[in-house]
Amino acid sequence: MLPSKINIPHHVAIIPDGNRRWARARNRDTLFGHRAGFDRAVELAKAARNLGIHTLSFWAFSTENWDRSPREISYLMRLYKAMIDKYLDDARKEGVRIIHLGRKDRIPKTLVKKIAQAEEETKHNKKYVLNICLDYGGHDEIMRAMRSAKKETYDLSQLLDTKGQPYPLVDLLIRTSGEQRTSGMLLWQSAYAELYWEQAHFPDFTPEKLECALLDYSRRCRRFGGDGADVHMAFNPKIVASLEIRFRHALAFEEGERLRDLTMRYLKEHYGLSKKLAFAAGANFAKALRYGQQHHWDEAKTSLTGLYAIIKKTIGLAFEPDIIASIEVDLWKTGASEEKMRELLAEKFRISSLQAAHPAHLAILANESIQKQDFSRAQQYLEQFYTLLKERVA
Image (tube, rainbow, N blue to C red; front, side, top):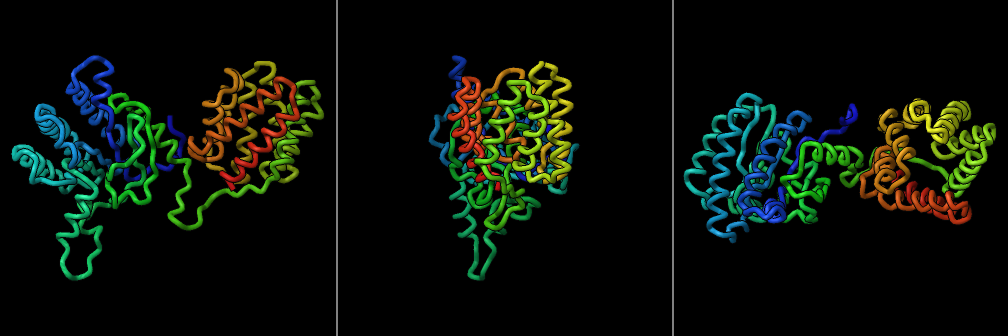
């Protein structure tokens, strides 16, 4: 489940890569992969509507894909016709406007006719937009727009294939199959798009994986060249690292009163809490740590939820306290891993998974050093961790 009040992008563009590799890995014909990919595309279109995404763009066939075999191209063109037939009823019922982006002079006339029918029958729909990028290339689109321009000064965006759409600019661009390039997908419209690289081949890119992409997107700060609305944290990394070493030492030796005092000081320095709020937050954190040490997970989660509710209200971080508490308790239960630590940091500080990767690695190294009671090395790792975290958040 996605957190409430998550920042949902208006326009998501997907480059559905990996259909053929997915099929070959299963010793199947590549056409089988395309069939699976189209079924997934229809499923994702519905999921996107349910998640509140207004505009969804799929790159179905590029201007360079004509280099493929006649057999594959013929099969793909038949699939596109079938997809329009399959999707058109849903589009009418759900208020989806279907728009073709790309050239119409090279695709089969029967498909052109089918596309024109879909565009005509849905042209008054305003609730959602589905862009089908077919015989599409970013360079080609811009060149076509420039050729259509007259001598007078024009806004080029009004000559592109997305002209007149409520949300022509891409907020989030997703490419599957581990490829990390845009290949010119909506080149003009994606100037400020957030990029998300998915390892799975497209037939395995489920609605749940789409939710993960949206969650990662919601953590990012989009400045558009200006100042962001970040939460600024002015803590001293060396002091915070020292206080963490000390409260973890106190926890190991069951020094209850000292643990509560150190957690209060740690939270005051780390999050800039007032003395009164730091006292309440520190008490919650100390209890959570002790409950975790005793494997009383429900009680630990309750105390952590109280702690993060105070932090959220005070400094305005956009996380959900119960979700953060659940992730942290799960990390305690199953043992610290970089994947879990990365998830915790990304969710807590609203940074992307990529931005959280290096801090998570340092946190794990510090944790391993503490378990070995090598507190000097742990202090070094924690200072690096908090310095890097401050750079990401501040």
